[in-house]
Each structure stands twice: as structure tokens, then as C-alpha cells.
Amino acid sequence: GVATALILNSPWLEFQGAEIGRRAISPLVQLQARRHPLAPLPVQDPGIYSRSLSSEFGGQWTYNKSWRPYRGFPVTSAFLNAVFQAQNAVDAGLSIDVPILTMLSTRDYLQPRWTETATEADVALNVDVVAHRALSLGNNVTVV
Image 1 (cartoon, rainbow, N blue to C red):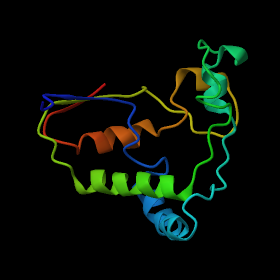
Image 2 (cartoon, helix red, strand yellow):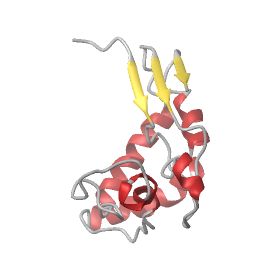
Image 3 (cartoon, rainbow, N blue to C red):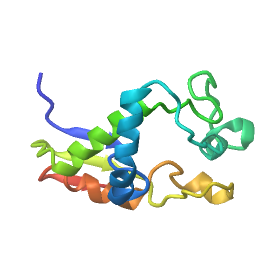
Image 4 (tube, rainbow, N blue to C red):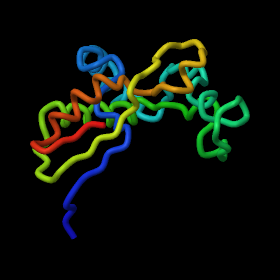
């Protein structure tokens, strides 16, 4: 069948550093992806996402750590390059012709140190940048 609507829950439509950050590092990631696609990138995950969610650290959720380790999975250049290519496509415009509901947190916290603010904010996405990008997905977009 054909979809009659699209619901997106915190989609990674744009890089945390916004379009300018993506455009700046994308050529380096693309080069690394060609040379060593499965090599992990030196990405530091300080564990704030896990700490904000896991009941082990005062969060509200108990989950299988083999599905989402405390400091996340290694990020390869091939993976990040694919993400950037998809974000480039979104940036160019997708002209989606069905109603789109995009759900986001009301604020973000993108700092490398822990505070209680992390329990009430998105610690992975720049919500303003993603909200702006979501509006360009099609002609009938609602962001909540």
C-alpha cells in the first residue's frame, strides 16, 4: 500500500552542528568512508543519554544494555557518511506529498557534562535545527 501520512519521532534530519557543521566535516567523513568504511570514528559519548534514561542512574527506564550500551555503539565513517548523504537529500528537499507530523522535545541539552537538565531535554538532537529542517519536508508539516 501507499502511506497516507508520515509520523516522525525525533528524526535526525540535520547534524547537531547545523548545516554549516555538516558541510564542513562531510568531505572528511566521505574520504574516510572510502578508505576505511568500517573504522570507528573518534566520537566521544560521555554517557549522558544513557544516564538520563536508565533506571540504573536515576532515569525511568530499564532496558537491555546489549541493545544500547552505556556509551553507545562505535560510529563508523560509512555510517556517518550515509547519515550525511541522507541529510543532504533532506536539505535539497524531498517534496513529501502526505501530511507529516514531526515530534520533538521542547528543548535540547547538547553539553558534554551531566546536569539534571538532561532528564528533561533532548541530549542527542538540536531541536531547533531539526524543527526548521522538518518544515522543508513537504507542504503539510506539523511540528510538535
